[in-house]
Length: 255
Length: 255
DNA sequence: CGTCCGTTTGAGGATCATCAATGTCCGTGG
DNA sequence: CCACGGACATTGATGATCCTCAAACGGACG
Picture 1 (tube, rainbow over the protein chains, first blue to last red):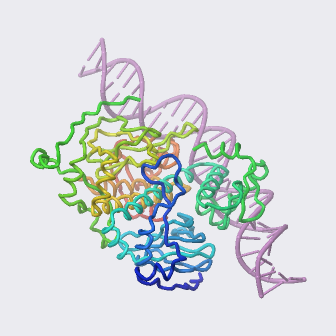
Picture 2: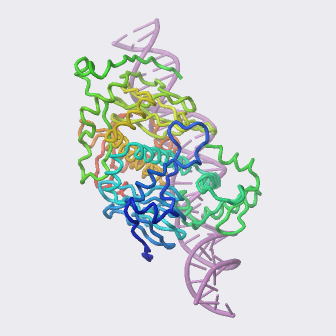
Picture 3: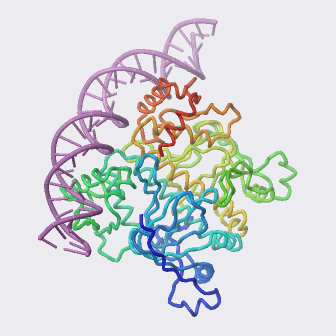
């Protein structure tokens, strides 16, 4: 598997960096606040000051498709925040299968560890830009700044809900239902500028299958069924267009 | 479904409570610290001072089996920490099925909300004792005390890993493998004083099925197979005894 | 224009859900 | 103390779904 080349440049110190990188908005997190009123989810939740705090200890990196950012069971030195592009985290099972645990969109955090070791492998799907933050430095910062840490707490809580949702998806018996829920989730994950009906799918059918607990053939059959039934069309491999929203929602609402 | 009666008594103020409730050790959390060395997971991670901070805003409650602590889609006023007993959180799906998202053992936190509403229903399986904490008060406390918040961050991170693990379990095809992984997980969750081979299963077969994405019949068939193959015996409905650890690990290591 | 990788489609075998009936445990009341 | 009732659990038969193996198709790229 190709490592890819990490074109990384260290961001300058906190003081000078604001002027030096005034074009860089800095990292941001995507999460639903604990007690937010309905909606209000799209607004940025990090203040400019918090962004600068993170920027001060962050390295902005560009990674090419297929680049591996870290491997499972290796020392977890860094935590990452996605700024642009799509990545995935996965785990290779002893059975030879690969289990994709998450697709990472902008504002997603990844690099969580257990006992100081990464528990997944992270790989870029598209070209991506990420912020790399030293774990120790981040923890020290979070312990000093309760407000910033609170944003991370909200973020992890959000991911917890997503993980539980994935468990529900995978628990469904029918492949079509799983795929529909995946499309719905992807639609809400990637805040695309495209038409609402279009959902970009940068990952392969194999990745989708590994995420949904299906073989890639079953994913393909599910897409065919959705297309035959006129609910979703797939203009090309990396795009899904929802044609019949009513019927589509009926598939996903089963949960 | 019976509500059960909540025998709750408000804990006194932070100052007097130390003497008044000196026998009460206060809440504790179970989680693996981000950077802990191998093992070291069993040690309590809350300091006495942090326990007292939590006790000051906590109400200790005893709940009887089948009591419902909160229902999904109702306002989330409280967060709970389990002190004793076993509970479950679940979600009723439109299909009529019930999806159990988690079994809650002592030191587990539950009551996470989205947009101010609970996303699951929480119900006691056995008689249990829990700490009930006003969500607003807890958030205010966490925003003041970064160290205490950090323990919660570790806890939620721990639960995130568990949720991802459950997704992997549910994604497995064979019922026997799923059940074996469930037994292993339960074994590590409940720090019982019993012999290492024994795993207590306070929940029903139906609950296990709802957690694993299986019908209760499939769970029953899986227990039968494990027993026929001499790997695990089930002396009674609420106890599993691992007889052949080697073979058992081989089943679970497939992940 | 040809290769390669990813995708689609087909046939056969395995696993689980469902429906149904029987069996077991436990608390209740006689 | 025993008999009864109900909830829970086990077992069997059938049908649906998905996985596996296999082959053909398609676009991207040199």
